[in-house]
Image (cartoon, rainbow, N blue to C red; front, side):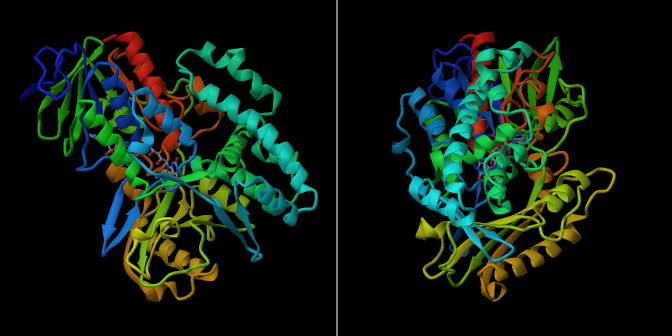
Length: 511
Ligand SMILES: Cc1cc2nc3c(=O)[nH]c(=O)nc-3n(C[C@H](O)[C@H](O)[C@H](O)COP(=O)(O)OP(=O)(O)OC[C@H]3O[C@@H](n4cnc5c(N)ncnc54)[C@H](O)[C@@H]3O)c2cc1C
């Protein structure tokens, strides 16, 4: 059966679609797909969104059990101004949809020697915290903030540009700040210009892990992540991170987007240099003038198009790392926990080598624990705690795949022991509900080819023009949005990916 989406050739059937001339099918209601749908609907396109699951948000989902609420993926809101921008662009106010609060301290770091370090955006306190670890580091912090701030502002300018032309990357306005501040050098070398103590070096570089990237192989430019946290703060939406997805889905619906849940796309039909239809798992043909795939880009090429992934660099694609996640409902509280608590061991460089180069599970991978009840008590029953624990894990090496059915429970057990050791005594005796997620989940749920959690890697050969472009090289009406296309991974970054994709659609196929 062929279903012609509103605006393609048939009259409008969707709310808000009347009078609009161009139709768009967005595949996937991840943050990137929802933001694309919102922007295009506001610009006058008739937008239909097909999502395989029965809820919005993709990785930013929710799991509820026994009165506990768990965010399934992201836990930190960085760059809230990007959220403000999106809502403002479509004539709304973010605060009418969400209550974002700043989490302070942003997190506590636990080191092997039992010492801790807190990151905060209160400058006087932050100077004190740095100084307490290394005499003189308080002053150095100010220099680091100045220089990483330059990287941040240059970086944001860079990622907000479409990068399908090589020359866009070389534009002096975008590259200028990078050259001046060793952005294309090594992240550790950048940090060592300011600090000597290993703990401080880790505190200002571990954020590369947010992108699924080793801080020991990352470019200096990723120093901007530490700046973003320290200067902009870390935020949280009351009700949980999933509220971000709910807010976007509500906004999309208000703007007339026809969201169709439980509509998995099985393949894309192509002819004459175009996608002619998206075929659903139950055989419907959905047609539209433009198709925007928010499904992970390598999966979309390999499985939906049955084509090899075109890497502009012509190098084999590199995948980010993965995670093992533990969602733990416990019938007691751990008042010493911060909203975010990270455990970093001295062997972080060796762990990163195992995770990123050898693709094997290290004995003591970095992990972090989120207790949203610190900010939002309604996330667990009274007197209880909803602990989310993220443990870094390798993505799969096809030559030596890990059997996660065997390895997953072992990782979970070792992690529970380590959690007990950093201040959650007898944790195992207090668990009343739990779920363990392994890298297999990212393949089965989201199609990630190597079980990677954060999409394609963000090394030098996979950023800017070198990252797979947000329009198919041959199929003129097929665009991509989300963490494996430009600019990359992270909630605010996929919002920017939507900005970039929408800019191209609007230029190529004006409404
Ligand atoms: C564990 C974890 C922790 C993270 N922590 C943070 C954090 O703290 N802060 C932060 O900023 N970022 C974080 N991230 C990264 C961030 O969550 C992602 O970069 C972002 O959510 C990706 O959004 P997306 O739109 O690219 O895609 P996705 O979330 O992958 O959404 C894609 C959507 O497409 C749908 N889909 C796929 N295939 C099909 C199909 N064939 N038919 C129909 N629908 C389909 C999927 O169901 C999904 O809804 C984290 C990620 C993970 C996994």
